[in-house]
Each structure stands twice: as C-alpha cells, then as structure tokens.
Image 1 (spheres, rainbow, N blue to C red):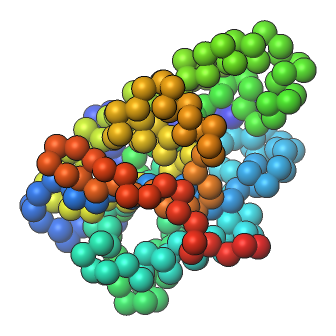
Image 2 (image 1 turned 120 degrees about the horizontal axis):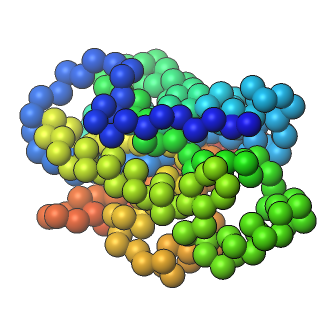
Length: 248
C-alpha cells in the first residue's frame, strides 16, 4: 500500500544544495512544474507493494525526455527570470525530474539554483484507494465514489486526505516563500494536485472556480505554470505551458 511521507512544518527539508544568494526581497516570480510522466501516469499498475509506494514511483522513458526538455526550457530563460531556488517534492519522480533538468542547466553553463526538498509538497494521498482508477472505484466502492462526487474538494478517502488537506500544507509552503528574503524567483517541482491548490491559494479561487480549473484539465507532466508577484498578490502568467515538451 502507498505510504504517506511525514510532513514537518518546522523543518521544510533536510536535503538540498548550497545557496549563494543573499537577502534581497520577497520573490517576484513563482514557477510550478509537474514531474515528468511516471509509470502510474502511463497506466502501469503497481505489481508489488514496493511499486505501489508513491514515494518511489519512477519516471518512464518519456518522463525522462520531458525532464530533459524542461531543463532546456529553463536554461533558455533570460537571466532575470531564472529560478534562484527550487523547492521539490520528496517523491522520487519529482526529484528525478529536477535532477535531469538541472543537468541541462549545468551543461549550458547556467548558474544553478539552490535546491531544497520540502516534505509538504508530496502528492495528494488517496489512502486505500491509491492507484485505483476512478472507473474501478465506482464499481468496487460505490459509496466512496458517491461521497467524492458529492464533495470533490472536501472528500477524504479512507486513510487518505482531501484536496483541502493538500491546500493546508501547500499554504505552509507559501508562508515559507513569503518569509524568504533571499530569493526573488522560486520554482516548485511537485504534482498536479499541488499545482491546482497553488492556483486556488494564490488566485483566491473559491470552490466553484477551483473545480472549473480541474474540469478544464490539470497540469500536464513537465508542464510549467507561472505567477508574478505584484504588490501583495500574485497574478497568473500562464498555466500548463507545454510548448517545450516532446510529443513522444
């Protein structure tokens, strides 16, 4: 069964790379990247309990190519738009995505952002329903399916968390960013649920507007979403940007 990683709101990450940046001002740009395609995204069901552990799900070959393309996209950014710090989900597929992207920055001679793992950025944990397709949940667990349809954002699967639970921990990450005076430009590498809730929080979306974003389509693998900070608020620049990605 999938394991939910511990989240420590006081210690946002114990792993990372050194940071050469010094006190400046609050971040002016915020990027959010979804990890490259994973085996689960490709429709491959876990064959063993280890494979079902969300923390160790791997990238597919396409996910690797997407991650490399992401790095090339980042390397081509103007100097004033390059991220200065990367906050990464603790899941392997997210960490691997940035590792591959970072290699492209290094190859291009671009200054590398410092990097931290923030355990609050893990994907929505679906408990006993993890990795079970919606169609199968509808057939095998009709009561759970009906409960989620009745309250898509607030529904909490057995042993899991709701989208609103994810929003609570993402809010803590935003508090961390707001308090950081060393970095103007921040890049988050995480998951589609995290990006959806970032939009909810940064753009002050109510339930109806949040669900409308989800209905139009969640962020794709290795896509980029960006916001600019203006005064005390954020403005969406673009969502689910994929033009840098390979088709196959």
